[in-house]
Image 1: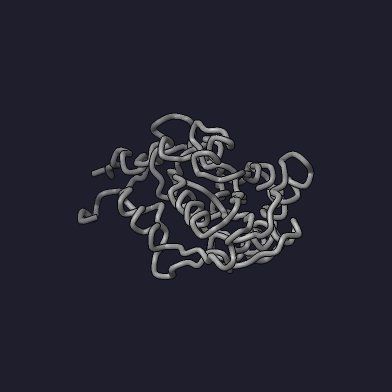
Image 2: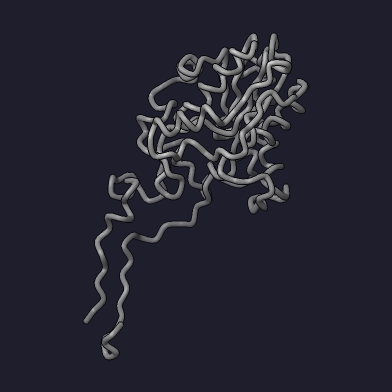
Length: 260
């Protein structure tokens, strides 16, 4: 402060809240070599495999009809660890049915739909010699708007895939994240106000299954009360009011003036 005689004051703009860790980050926003702070599995790569193993076990238990398929493929790079875990747990072979263009980054955070579509057209290429005539299980870590997933399924069918079964190693994302991941409104989420069967139809998949929220915490190995899972449940740590939940809530807080 320029006035050396003035006293500085501070005010809290929100009440005290417990520290919560992002559950979505464990499923989608990490890299395989991220150190896992939640349990003694080592790296996020291992946790992703635990997600997929839980999903495969969930199917084998009869709660969901297992995919009658010939091959497991990952959506690279996001689905690689989960696809490895799913293939091992289900006993299906895994192969590289999709090739990713390394020069195209994440598309769901692009500011406009046309930019996202343009990025998607350049992002992935299917390999017909691997997927043609096959019933494939496509494993990924999450679905947000569904644009990427819908196009991947269409490309696999164009490449000759006989059936496309989608398996996601996280629950449906139905609500935007206001605390770090740049998402828009709930209405843009493909899972918003849709059942799993309706999402599968919208995407053009023969079947679709998500890992349950219970399966997420079983894989992480720590309780729900130390995590934020608002994008799955709508239960925001800062409360239910619009002022706490809005995407621009922090930008709209009143400026706290120091005493003069």
